[in-house]
Amino acid sequence: MKYQPGDKILVLLTDEVGVVQEIINEKMVLVEVKGVKFPIYTDQIDFPYFKMFSEKFKSEKKEIFINQIQKEKIIPKTKEGNGILLSFFPIFDKDIFDDDIVDKFKLYLVNQNETAYTFTYNLIIAGGSHFELKNIIDPLSNFYLHDVKFEDLSDSPRFKFEFALKVPNKKKVPFYETSLKIKAKQLFKKIEEIQLKNEPEFSYLLLNNYPERVEEEKVDLNRLGNAGYIVYDAAKIRQNMEPARSVVDLHIEKLTDSWKHLSNFEILSLQLKAFEKYYELAVAHHQSSLTIIHGVGIGKLRDEIHYLLKLKSEVKSFVNQYSHMYGYGATEIYFKHK
Image 1 (cartoon, rainbow, N blue to C red):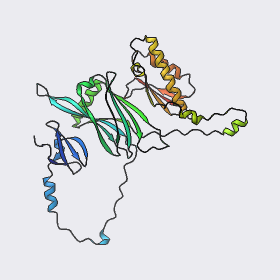
Image 2 (cartoon, rainbow, N blue to C red):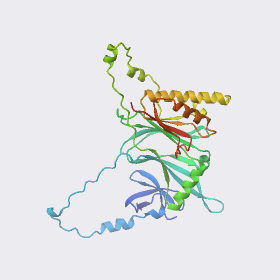
Image 3 (spheres, rainbow, N blue to C red):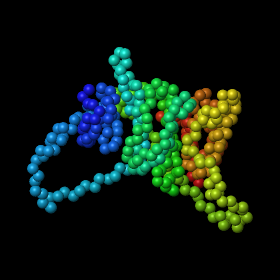
Image 4 (tube, rainbow, N blue to C red):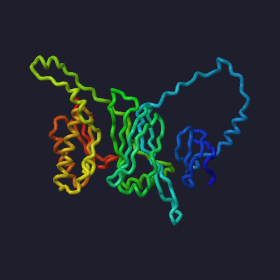
């Protein structure tokens, strides 16, 4: 092996100096550059000795007059909206035939926005929580989550996230929920793609722009009171409401722990009751959209929800299209702006 832990290296693409932290395999190492750790192929780094040597013997400085100094170029800041990504770095090993196989994945949260967020992360495998974490991710930074064995990802794992602004903003929603579900077939396809492109990782977008809070329509309460209507303070009522959700999972194991004894009719009734609850909360909190995860199955729950949505006056449109996070197992609902 050309490199060993502790070796100083130069990242060829960025011309930055770092240190080798860990040997991943024959082709890849884990390095740390300016406090950020990330995997990289060995053909993309080199020892920094030539750079250090050449810097010591720079050509003699020429005298520069004031009128020869070029104006400093203003470099624009990175625009908000590049998003937060969940990145998978496969760690390869050798099988008995000396072929490369994926042993595990290193998971990183990549924040490309200029905003700091708090986040709650939960990895769900086979219906149960496999790993949980709460922390903060700084602007324009990477956050190492954990390692996941390759075989653990064969049972359609779901990666759940809840993001919130580290510094609250009244113009933004209090939190944003999202989840990613990966099937084994999709996983194999992604691994093949990065091997063909000689790339170290693949990523999924979790959050692009943090959502704006929908402004509430102001009503002249005095005018209503003078007209004989009884006026209630809706703001105080909303304070006691359960928080709305932007994504609701209606899989029965998410709604109740004791469901195995229930009949299909009882399960469907519980799911529809939960749908109505979170639909009404979304309307009450003036959400612009709501995603309902109903799964694929035989389509009974999906059809029931679509039938109900056609009857609801608040719905502008809804769509059940393919998503990399939910496949065809989710319906996106968009509400009318009043």
